Length: 254
Image (cartoon, rainbow, N blue to C red; front, side, top):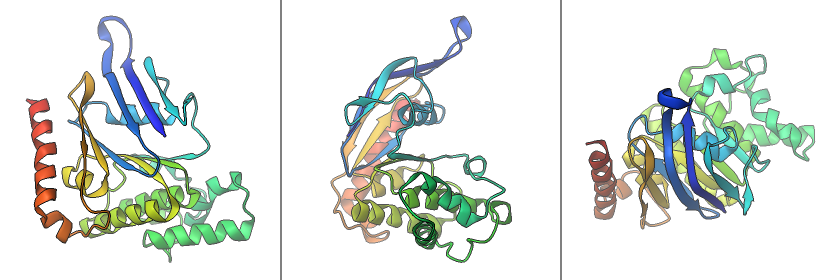
């Protein structure tokens, strides 16, 4: 579905140029959740912006269904790490969630129902009439996630989407993401610094090197489709996979 082919990007020119991505290649199949992990400063956010069509890479390209991505595709939704800047402060929470639905073939009633459902999914079913500035940082991030879920994209790209929420909410949202993926056939590409999260959530983990960045390896997560926050994380296979990712990241940072 998604192919990243020799993607590279540098900021600036000449001696002052910073190479954020050297050459990154991987694929994402339809219906997969693929997590990307790497050392701090290796260009993970730059990678997601390039894949989403928000940044023109200096070399290489990404394709969605064999079509090169040169702008944000209509079937793609992005959940930004800087969630507070992605919400519209003059719209209420429900209005923020409904906003991208205006481009879909939905009447007003259907938009409201879709938004209410998404807010309930993320535990904000009573917050629709509030403004973003009336919510905590973690709640604002959940609004951003609800907006993306309400859009029901074919491909959802997420940059550290659960970093600002408490541990219990994070686990609930991880399980929600896997459930929505199954129910709506959504494909997810997600960046995270959390090794445990990458293994628990994904079908495959793409491990990046330190900058200038390349792909060290892609690890298949052969855990059962039905996962449990306690039993899965205690399983021998989970512990083994977590250790494999951690060793690669440690080796890359040394």
